[in-house]
Each structure stands twice: as C-alpha cells, then as structure tokens.
Image (cartoon, rainbow, N blue to C red; front, top):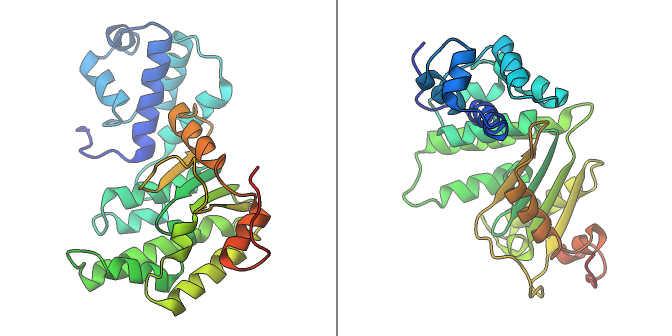
Amino acid sequence: MPPRDIPTARQARLGAELRKLRELAGKTAREAAGLLSTDQAKISHIEAGRIGISEERIRRLAVFYACDDRDLIEALCAIARESRGQGWWDEYRGVLAPGFLDIGELENHATYLRTVAVMTVPGILQTEDYIRAIHRSATPPLPAEEVDARVEFRLKRRSIFDRDTPPPFRVIVHEAALRMRFGGRKVAKGQLEYLLEASEWPTVTVRVIPFTCEDFVEATYPLLYAGELCRNSTRFRWTVLWVASSSLRPPNSRGTWGCSTPPSGRR
C-alpha cells in the first residue's frame, strides 16, 4: 500500500508516539527496522503516520523499547485498528479541508477536552445562527454550499455531549468573545444564552478571562487540547493551565454576561 499523502491527526499521533518510544529507548530507526525485518524508509513512514502498522508489530516494538505502560500500548493498538470511513466526520472527506475532519476525530476519541477562545465562542458550543454568521463574513466569500457543510459539521461535533458519559470539557473564553456581535444583537443574545445553558451541564466548565485581567497570556487563535491515554503534550497542557490562571471562577464567569452579580475574584 502506498504511503498516505495526508495522514489523519490520529494516524500522525500514533507514529509520533512510536517515534518517542524509540528515541527514549535510545534505539535507531535501523534497529527498529531490523526487528521488524523491514527497512528504515518504512519505519520513517510509520513514524510520520503515512503508513499503518499492525497491533502485533506495535507490541513487538513496545517490548524492544522496554515500554511497560500497558495503557499507552493499548491506546496505540486501538488507533492502529481504526480505518478511514468509520467516523461520522468521514462523510465530509473531500468536502471540507482535512483540518476540520481532524478536529471531529480528535474530539470523538478524547477522554477530556480543554479549549481556549479569545475572539469567538468555542466552535463546539456555537449556535447554528452564530456559525453561519461567522462563515458568511469570511473574505473572500465562501460558496453557499461550503457554508452549509461547515455549519452542519460543526453542529455534529456536539454529539459527544449526547453520550452516557461525555468527556469532561473545560472552556476558557475571553470576555471579548462574549461581547462580539457576529450576526447582530439577536444572534449574539441567542449564542450567550446557549453558552450559559452549556455551562450548567455536568461535564462542562466555563471560565471567563475579564477585560480587567492584566496578566493574560497573549493568544489570538483558539487552542484545543484533546486528552487521550497517549502521552500528554506538555507544551500545550501548560499553556492551557497558564491561561486558566487568569480566568474567573465559573460562578463569577457567568456574571460577565449579565446572569449574576459582577465578578469579583479569580482562583
């Protein structure tokens, strides 16, 4: 099978984790190739997510790399068993850019989610009118059919909250995002009401960074951290925690959109 041109985020993650294990063990790609009776080029493709690898080979490599993290090994094997076409997001392959599909796939498999948003409400918690208003304001203008596909895709991402056990979701949003009126006053009001409703869901926590915060970490783009059994990304984990330190506690956060007394403190 020829190498993939564009691996999914999960396929790339599998390869990256195998590369980390090899490097931590002090093994070379040539040594790994020798173990599997293949060549270095194939190991490079595997570690880049461009070709798949069997569960049996993952377990052999884990032993060779002296990895005794059973949960990690099982998580990697689970990714190896996956194939394209199994997730709802695959319906949009060839319709939307691969980055959209990666987000849907990552959220679907995440054990927990953390997100930071500065200028807009986090995508998974946006209302249909709000999503449509954002995409209609794109420059250059998007074709109507692509706007419809993006709206439909973003709304389907909410399906993770319909599970018996939804993943814990921690949201950090800047007050600026709450004041922006994409689509006008009515659309903005509906979006804030939905965000308030979502903040009361058992697994969702919403915290707001107020305008008065003077030690906010500069970030002009949304950040999504999808936790899995694989090893954590230290860089992004600490970025989220650092931003969280500038946010209000959930009860005070709700006050920033006029639903309680004015906020007065941070944790």
